[in-house]
Length: 181
Image (tube, rainbow, N blue to C red):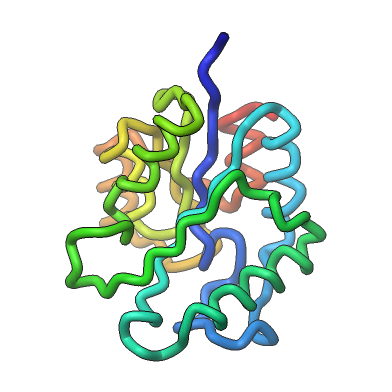
């Protein structure tokens, strides 16, 4: 039996508009093209995972119920079932914590490789910041950046190119160009 392929998605700046320490679900705005693009990938056999850093929890800016409420609103706005993602990893650690699940740690990705019998060379981590493809590279996966969140400057473009990480306008372009779906 063939090993599984998967996409690991960042939340803020990739699936939803980046907002500074998003706490209020009413402020959440989805990136419209992400929903249909991910449905195409899922229909093509990709398992979908979400891996999001939420240091606002450690910093005391918001708590777990706030993150859950925002995720629930994201699912409703996209029209996704609660189980749209095979699994979700919410990393509450602050940036100075090196242990745990905070990206660029690939602890979550490596656990999912084992649990779901994933083929790392057929898996991607996609996001709007360097820590996303860095997480992929740390797990032996492929990484990609999207321009729907934090600005990608020339320095990051050069860094991405040196690591063979491609940059896309959004998830829809990634799905159609890179995955050819």
